[in-house]
Image (cartoon, rainbow, N blue to C red; front, side, top):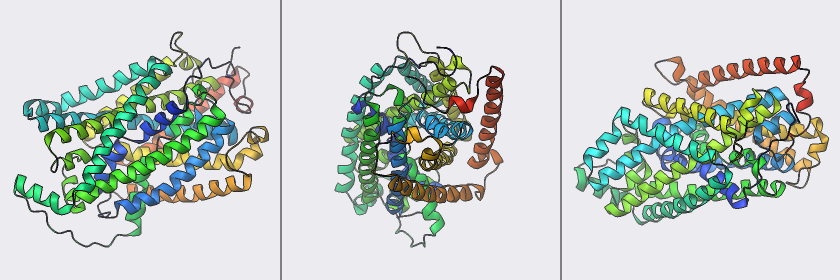
Length: 496
């Protein structure tokens, strides 16, 4: 069959465990090893309230996850969020929502690739390989290694979902094992132990923390950033075209992944702040990039320190294949509907992977690496991701509300939660809290004292959305010239 409605040709080979691993590995990595630490730089007033801000961030995350679960049970197709919004809202909003997500996640893939190298540098420093550690920290070498890491995982994704799943699940188990060492170690030591270790190593006496009043804007801004810990469960929805028993496994995997990550991240962050004084973290974060293993290294034997740094590196590496699958399947679904050139949906005849979509997503992620390198700061990429994903999640909650009115047939296929009254309540509360997070995040960004406009994530995001709109208008007109109407195309699910 020719045209936007031809069959996808994807293989349904990812089981429940693989779907859970996709969500977990997309969420864990920077979200536990970097963000809860470096938030002291991004939100200087947060101080000792990181755990409380994290708990608050769980509420909108769960509401967004429930919205995804509701929609995935009725529309189990590749490109999840695009399919959901385009079928429940409009093709334009579907494209804008998913393009926002694609851009933010692609940049985040680059940021994560850039963050991995310092973990290997730290291993070298702990082992006494000072010259090699210094080499890894040099600008050109770090840039080259970051790109090499990224494109190694692009190559893995090109091998298809069978190899992808066999690689991801063992890495996830290793990540949990080594991450558990951090949790146990963090709760074995306290602030006094850490202060004594630092004093003995460097002669630096950590001062007593100053009591500061935390403003509600700081609290909400921190929660909005910590919300990124849960960005990743949507990767499960993007794999909807390759999931076995998708009506059951997609919603179930989303719920399991969010629960696992919420519990593990909370324990991990609490353990770090139990062992390390927050004011020490806040002071050092202003001048250098900190990681959880690097901080605990002051308290642990070298062998254990190397193990937990390696675990952190693996958790970051795990982000890459799952996130690449997510962004490439969004491009694949756009191409299948005809919103971007159909050749981007071309599948490799052996692996049945969307080769062109994966490569193009890798190119966008490479821009994220280069941007992080030139800016000498990765938090711009994190801020862009937060803006993009908050917008996307708001649209997903809105899609839950709109689906019964726009497409009753698809609405009748929903199996998650008992009634539409309950589903609408979830969606409304989700919209309210996510909009609050977005407003606070944008306000904080626009009021930041930065040297140029392009360091404001809001302006970068608006520019990208303008580009997305132009792409959409151009491609829709091209479809209409061929006698294909995008409203008609998106009135039904893509064929499998």
